Length: 119
Image (cartoon, rainbow, N blue to C red):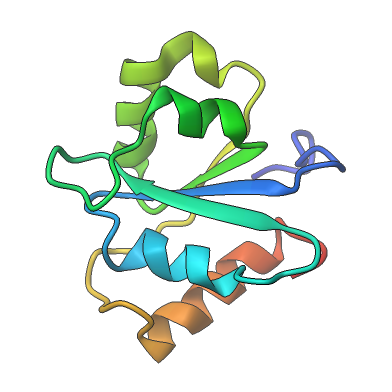
């Protein structure tokens, strides 16, 4: 995300999106369990996702993190106007990690650090 388009200072509700909501986005959500400054939820874009992203997720979120560009494209196609004013940040994390894999956790922390001041 560019410096011209920073996250809102009050961004507290984080939505993480991947395809199946089993490994990447669910791991990201778990990083924020009991976090004092952020609340996180996760969902997937595919029909077989553990939790499939719905309009309620979009309305709840202050900022949306996607794992791949195609996830952002799917969200824009499906939720269009509901996304107005909501930052969507592509973390560029490929689908090659298992749930809570140490390398995935490290990568998530590294990529999120530039966007979340109280990580």
